[in-house]
Length: 456
Ligand code: 4AD
Ligand code: MG
Image (tube, rainbow, N blue to C red; front, side):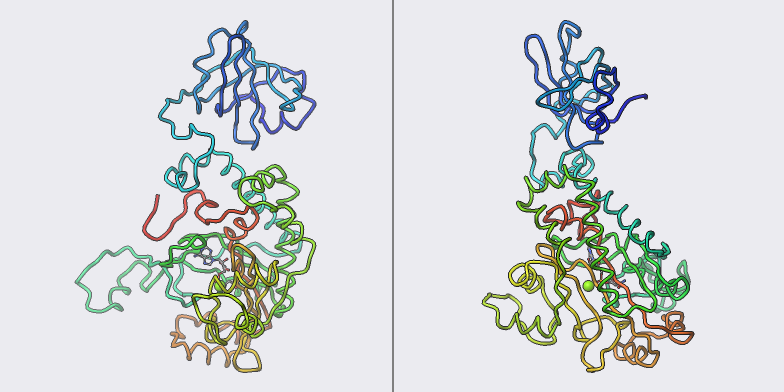
C-alpha cells in the first residue's frame, strides 16, 4: 500500500502542501459540528499526526472515530501552528474496525496492567519509545564494535558446559520423565546429544575460543538463566553483549567497557531525543542530565576492599550485613552508586570465592581480576574479568570447585596452545535499556519477558 511514514511527514518539510497518503491507528478522536479531528499513529513516530475531517467533504465520520480503528487517509499535508503539520483529509478508508472492548481506551494505563496484555501494550506511547531506544542501541552496539575491527560471532545457544557454574542452566532434552533408566548417566546417554545439555547462560567460553583466533570478537544474542528470583532486574531469557579481547588486561577491558557504554548512550541521545524527553516527563525527572553527565565524566573505579570499608562505615540500615568476603547485595550496590558516587562505578578485585572459576587470580592469593559495573537505579549492568591464562592456576581453581575437567577439555586446550592474557565482559542489554530509559522493571523493556512461573 503506497503511503508515507508519519515520522517522515513530521520531519521533512518538502511534503508541506503536497497530496499524501498516510496509514495508521486512531489514538484519539474528537467530533464537533462542522469538523472532526483524529490523532493517527502508524508506529514510526512517538508523536501522532492530526487528521482534520471537514464535514463538507466527509459528512459521515462516525466509522473513523473509535480508538484503535485502522485507517488509510488521503489528503493534503499542511503546516499547523499547534501540531507542526496536519492533514486535511479528502478521503478516508477503514482498514480494520476496533470495537469498544479494545483495552487501550484510556490515555494512561499502569505498567502493571499493561503487563497483562503483552500483545497489545506495544501499541502504547511508552512501549513505542522503549523499543525505539532498544533498536537504536542494538544498532549502536554493532556499530561500536564494527568500527573497531571486532568480528561478530554467534555462539551456540545449546551447550554442554555451564560457564558461570551457578547451576542456573535450563535442561535441553527430548526424553520425558521415565523410570526405565537406572542412573542419570544412562538417561543422558540415551538423550538427543548423548550427554547432558542445556541452554547457554553465557557465550563466553566459546567467545574465548574465537578470540584466540580472531583477536577481538563480540557476541550479541540471548542467554538463559533458570534463576528462581522474582526481582525487577532478572528474567529467564535476556540479551547478552559479550566482547572478548586477546592481549587485554583488566585495565584495558575496563577502558573498552566504559567507552562502549558512553558510545551507545550517546547514540540514544542523538537518535532518540523525543523518546528521552518522554521518559524524563513520565519515568525519571533529570534523565537527560544524568545521561549527559555519564557521557562527559569518568566512571569511578573502586577496589572491592575499599567498597567494603565504605559500606562498613555507612550510616545505613542494611538487611544483609557487610564484611570482607561477602557478595554485594543490591542494597549495597545501590548505596555505593546512588549515595556515595552518584555515577557508574567499576568495583574491582573481588574475593575469588564469590566469583567464577575462569577469572585471573591476583598475586594476593585472595582476589581475582574481575569487575562489575554498577549504575544508579539498576545496580550491576556488566560482569567483567581478565581470564586466567595460566593452565595450572586454572586447573587448581576448577578442582577447588569440584568441576568435571572432562567437560571443559576444549576450553583447557586454549591454555595449552599459545595461551595469552585476555579479557572480556558481559553486558546485560535489558539492564542498560532500563538505565537509559529510566524503566524500573526489566519486564517492561522486553516484548515478551520470560520469568519464573510465567510464559506468554
Ligand atoms: O555477570 P554475569 O553472570 O557474567 C557472565 O555471564 C560472564 N560470562 C560475562 C563475560 O565475561 N563474558 O552476567 C553478565 C551480565 C550481568 O551483569 C547482567 O547485566 C546480565 O548479564 N544478566 C542478566 N540480565 C537479566 N536477567 C538475568 N537473569 C541476568 N543475569 C545476568
Ligand atoms: Mg555478575
